[in-house]
Amino acid sequence: MAFPPDACSLIVKYVADSKPTLVSLCTVSKQFHAAAERALYNTLQLKGHDLTISVCRLLARTPRLSSLVVALSVYDQDDESDDASVAESDPSSVYWEALAGALNSTTRLRFLSFYFSSGQPETAWVLDGCTFQLRTFHCDLVWDEHLQSFLATQSRLSDLYLADYQSLAITPTISSSSFLPRLSVLECTFSEAAVALVPDRPVCRLKTCFTHSKLEDKRTELDILVASLRQSKKRLRSLDIADSSYDASFSLELLRRVTDDSALCSELRYIGTLVLPVVGQQRLEFYACLMRLPQLRCIEVDVSEWDPSPTHPAALRALTLELRLYCPSVTSVVFVYDFERHVVKMDGHLAVYDDNAAADNIWREV
Image (cartoon, rainbow, N blue to C red; front, side, top):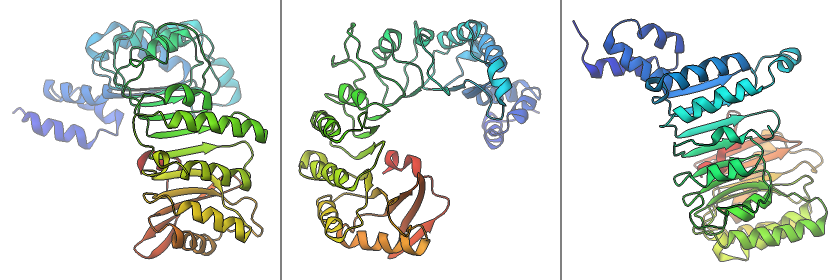
């Protein structure tokens, strides 16, 4: 007796996290084969040289399967591989040709991620000729003409991570209104990318870092970045700016620049990473700026210079409650001490230390 289609789908959904089980279901019946195959190829994570080549070649020669792929993540090596095997599995021309063939076949792809331990020069050509329209793109490829030309075709892309950026004088230019018209979430390791991509686009969540380390150069960089943020089509909701060396005085300058501009601070839900001053007067100035952020929900502060370190849960809870005296809208605080994050969340009127909180993506969610 044949199962109803809804029953097959429910069973497949229940075991969707187990690839071996999905493979087994493909052999049960034609009904299960169709449902299990869709789940099996919907989301693919390719790790390692040989596996990636094998799966990519299968997708390239089997349009029926490649049309099922919606999300694809590609890693340059296995997570558990040792140094010797990494050396043997460096991506080769065969690897990139196989990947290019798969990408040209996955016409329904919506989520694409490249995770590489180092930039891969002159490899963005694998995106040439792709017809899919992405929603999310995590890109560890080196920025070049091929990558820029590919992005120019992505009219629906809203969430972009760029590991590399350089200004290129080619057509179509980044300044064109048709270049990434729906971009709203941008994460980039170079502030120059933010300066180029934020204006005239609906970017409301930005994570980047300062390129310069000298104070005067950083001030200039901040001026340019703030001017670009003012040109976004949407009010800023999240701003996360990393720095090679965190300084309380410069953090206060940055906070003043943001809170002095109503266009930047009126809708801001998240801001970081700022140094929480130790000195009382400077800390009061810091809190005074936070009082201008009526929508703030989360703040990330660095306390690495504090002595003794305030990493005990009781100390972190006390600092959270102190901060909320001046900014009661805050519901969570991320404390950074020597690059380790500690999260305190409000539960009613109680500040609760959260061991299991995933701090890396809070700026995307508030």
